[in-house]
Amino acid sequence: DGGPTPRAHSYTKYNNWNDSWIASISSSNPNLISKQVIGNTYEGRPMTLLKLGKKSSSSKPAIFMDCGIHAREWISPAFCQWFVKEALSTYGSDAQMTSLLNQMDVYVLPVFNIDGYDYTHKGSRMWRKTRSRKSGSSCIGADPNRNFNAGWCTLGASSNPCSDTFCGYSPESEIEVKNVANFIRRNKAIIKAYITIHSYSQLLLFPYSYTYDLAQHHSELMQVAQGASAALRSLYGTRYTSGPGATTIYPAAGGSDDWAYDLGVKYSYTFELRDTGRYGFLLPESQIKPTCEETMLAVKYIAAYVRKNIY
Ligand code: PAY
Ligand code: ZN
Image 1 (cartoon, rainbow, N blue to C red):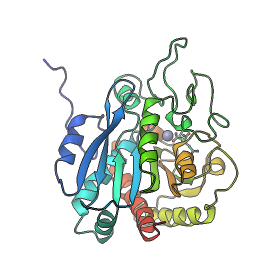
Image 2: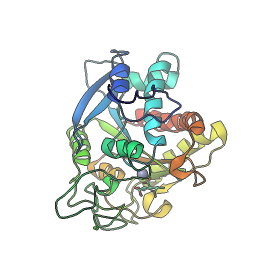
Image 3: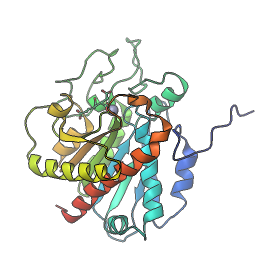
């Protein structure tokens, strides 16, 4: 007896992390998709990164997108799965997607914090952090979005291991953060945009969150964010607010978007998907499809802008 049979994968349901979706999608179209493991999680699960893009002999500029940094934000991994499915099924028919995948590669990390995500399915639905342990504390995990080396643990983060915004014992103390940071550092010459998907609040954030200072490219980042928000709104009227993290939501140091930006990835964005609090993290499954459809328009808008403005 192998225990309970897992529910079949569906793009309009919240699926727990499982190797088989990744294995089947990545072998479905070898000309457009491949996978690589960038390291293991604290509990030993492989972090598999998908690479979407038309095979090419020379290296292409790339976009890196991750979902599921925070365990309880279930709409986020649902969006990464949706994005991969849409990319494969609309390549060749949708002009924007075709140009994107012809000219660039898109790296998608479907679930960043796999251990935490699994725990929200099997243990506690509202868990946010990783699941790492350290002797001397009975509290588990750190906030991966406070653990990047960007103004680490200065503002809007806690040094208390029991806090939901615990910054960790040192920058990149969380192995999941280290694995992603290592990949982006290794590939920083080709990575032109960093997109991270969270929920909820309906915001499109960009640096900075660790300081109130405006980013060097503030006005361009704002202009692109507003264009992306308008594209998103065109489908179902969903309203997003755009702006720097510190003033648009709250100051928060150690976030992935600020870290990527300071590394030199100019187009660095954090999405806070639906809703504005009615359901919050418990967004009903009936909203997966409309949320993913509208978010596709925003992500494709940013991707098209980056593709036309390679630096
Ligand atoms: O860039 O300022 C930033 C990060 C903001 C997010 C964070 O706290 O890491 C915002 C929250 C999130 O998605 O984790 C928003 C949600 C609603 C929360 O838990 O507060
Ligand atoms: Zn989050």
